[in-house]
Length: 531
Image (cartoon, rainbow, N blue to C red):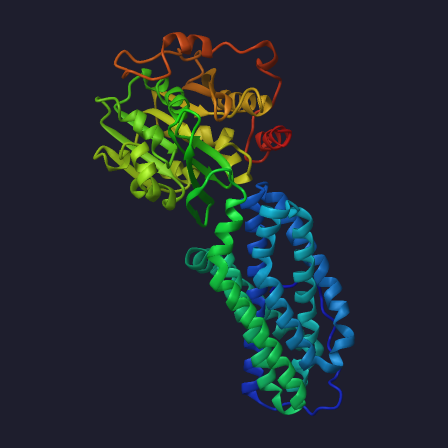
């Protein structure tokens, strides 16, 4: 793992003569490379897990990195007395690091699901991992000098160069290989096994003639125990994950997967009405309940469809439920749906309960589904759309907050006509009023006229939307289209009432959110943490 704490030059090796071998030096540098890659993966795995489970990715990243770097400094100091027995000490450190890092994701997930002590556990695990990582460099410096004596500055340059290259490769492998192929839990276990092999076998092979037989046998036996433990957990990982995950949800889980972007869970039970209640959760947050999702999606889509709607753009909404409502209009000619996660649109297209709920909307020939970040997609978009439906999750992370920024709504204007209508799901005016009115203020700051409205969705409570039109020449009218289909929940009378807010939830003095000042993120975190 890449380290930012300077390491003192290793003292000259004690009794054993140097190992004069280019092959030995190459192997040791290869061990440095692998250990650096593994260390960075542990760090990334801890930050990613916290973002999935807790949200607030900036805080999770800050805490993990700060604790690990602090512990690395302590680990470097703690390794000084071990340099006289550097071979055995390094092999022991790597075995312990393989065990601690490999099991870190599992331990934290169990702490979150069963014990509900995630943050203290994350600090402890980060400290232990950082402590062991910090001990690596001083010991490796000592071993390097045993192979070939060189000036301290030259030795530091060599070992840090390889260390940083390993960190680069580890950082790239985490999102591109480990997460897609193994997932977080198994990926950490695989990296732990690599760490154990690199740290124990390579070093013991290089210095086999300088290490007493009893020490070699002891270290190899310890490595075998570590590998057996990691292998056993790997075999049981799926069952452990399913059991732990089920602790987080009231209803039986019928589908679960972790993607590079989010944790997707679908549950199903029998509701109080006797209907089957299918629920979608993203990173633990409820996205819909099949019992009342029609209320949410009718209120989201149909007021925006009161204008021209031959060409429709949906941003977010990968479950295709908003798309289902759009396609109920026969004069819709084309719909483009842009959702970040291909796993979500694949699930909406192929997973029976969700596919049946959205009416196989993604199979409609009028629909083009694009998997891309909406912000970046808008920067290169060339088409024009009569109606835009924005159905993102609430802005409770930095990645989502940028999709509720003045800059985002400025970009959106590139794909609008002067008469286009835009609707944005904006959270709860009751539970998060500052967040809600900040979104409205942000849209107006980007040059739109807005109309705020809210309805009740039993699964969510009071929920709000913002209907907008570019130009800022007045608020768009809140009504249904003349050719609107028969709806289960919404009519003109409900819409008329939806624009009336109670005295304690009327517009508040809040700021617009920008990329450089994402106030909606702070509003959202503060308000939702109170519930």
